[in-house]
Length: 93
Image (cartoon, rainbow, N blue to C red; front, top):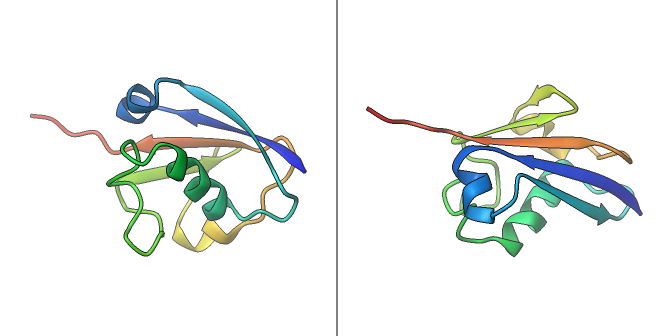
């Protein structure tokens, strides 16, 4: 098992009610799987941030240890101590 940390921003943090969440996941867990697991615990918060097939929406920017990752990187295997930052898109007028 490994420890990872999620850092939530903007409306996502408000919807979840926390800015930081620590999780223990099995070794070999891909990034997308960890995000999907978190989303299953807070379905309303992630409603528009994951596509119906479970992939990342363009409305969610994901950073791992400070580096922006895209859809192809969502299969990246997480390591102990990884910090995952989730930034939902914000708009206004």
